[in-house]
Image (cartoon, rainbow, N blue to C red; front, side, top):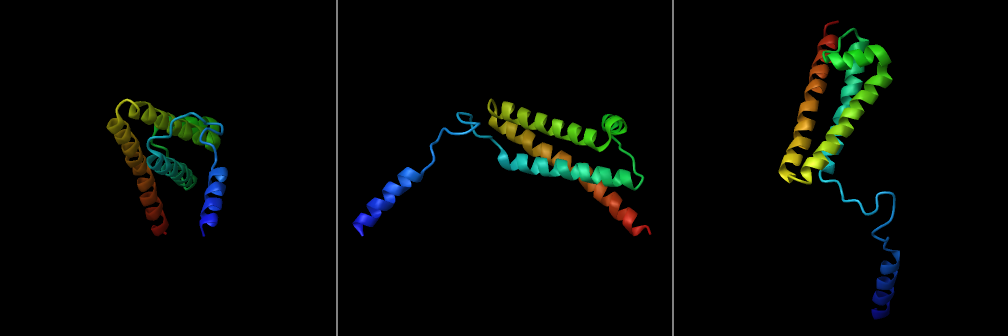
Length: 132
């Protein structure tokens, strides 16, 4: 039994990956990965809901987003939305490394605020679906 433990221990040490390997080696971990995952998910939902509402004859309320949609269509909307998403994540990281609680609040409020247009679009789609 003892030899098995020694062997297993030696295998575990050899199989463990080095700590400093890969593209992001030496970089600190992200501070708020759960909030970022939700933020990206809600941003993707926002794009899908916006495009669906526009497809049934709705209008974009955000003037800048409306101009981008008029100029570049869906690819422009995707690029615009995810550029803003990357900006918010970078700002949350930047602020969070100086003031942790403030950065966390920014990440959490970003998710909450981004949920509002998704919910509004969902209600609009429900109203549209039940109006026939």
